[in-house]
Length: 207
Image (cartoon, rainbow, N blue to C red):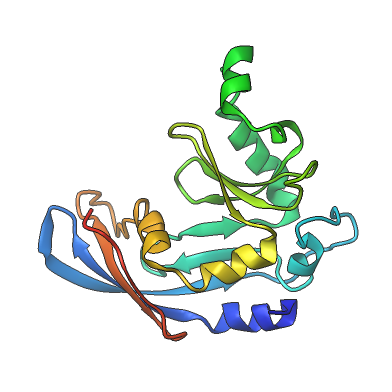
């Protein structure tokens, strides 16, 4: 998919999550989702890795799977102007590690990676190594256990994959989306199924 085709696909994609209330699974509701994008960013100063320049030539940022009522979202790819702030948040998780823990827990590319996005409201981040064999790949950092999981070889492929969630990846995003509205945090929801206008149908395991 070319960058222009991907831009059209992201902007056209929408659908619904079929949800059940946590601790009251007999209560259900439908949540409508779409993606929010901003205007393209300046690409002249971006490193020529991971198809960053191709991505930011058509997008400034993308917030994926947004519920307009709760404003819950699955992922956020940030504008380059926000990378430094995201990096500050990410580095907080590393500052108390001693040398032995850094050697055991962190990948070799950690000191030079870009922090290009996050899983909103989780403390988890989206990283891109800039050096070595993994330069340009997209990784997720999960602070619970210090897990670094490779998700795609570049940012365009990462974005394209997010448009076609399977059961596994739907379950992954369901773990932190609760669709809380108003001030009552006790009413939370679990995604059971996804149905979208691309013909995708996916199901999660029970929460």
